[in-house]
Length: 62
Image (cartoon, rainbow, N blue to C red):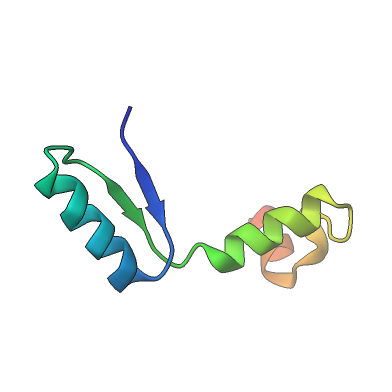
């Protein structure tokens, strides 16, 4: 199973380099996940709905 590293890009790169050094290559680095993660938490908590966002409504109308 591939590893997914989430966090500050430079730190994730250090972890990816260390994993490669330990013969565990192939770690995926996901960047800029904070905004989408917070959005998902808010939707799951019922604070927001997916159509609460103006841009989301526009995308759904098209």
